[in-house]
Length: 160
Image (tube, rainbow, N blue to C red):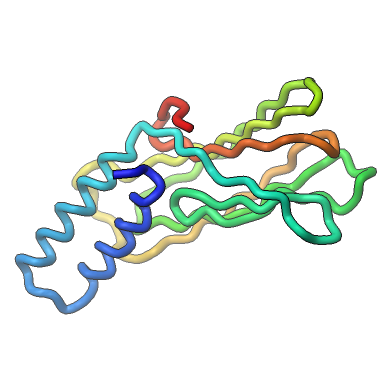
């Protein structure tokens, strides 16, 4: 199963769990959710970064765990960009660490942003509700900087 569709499948499965389906059906859905969650543990999932059409300089970001946000700055004279985003998890129990920013002083400047995510332990009791977590961090970079954003799940290795 492609890694990008895993969080969406988890959300669909959890919706089925919450509905009034029969006990055996709920067990099957829970097994599917557990398999999907296991398939993304230890992964570093690449995020889509697209140029943002607006008066401000910036990009939109979207990706796994319904990552939705922007990397923007107000004017060309600013040296600081702002990552402002949210992650939405299928259940409680997830933890989001401080984003790590690494840039190269090349032309154009390459900026890698890694957002660490820790999944709940297997078999942990978690809330069965969508949980949205805000992410904000400042990034120093040039106007022409190129951004790459990753969601690192449970200390995963880079996967593009």
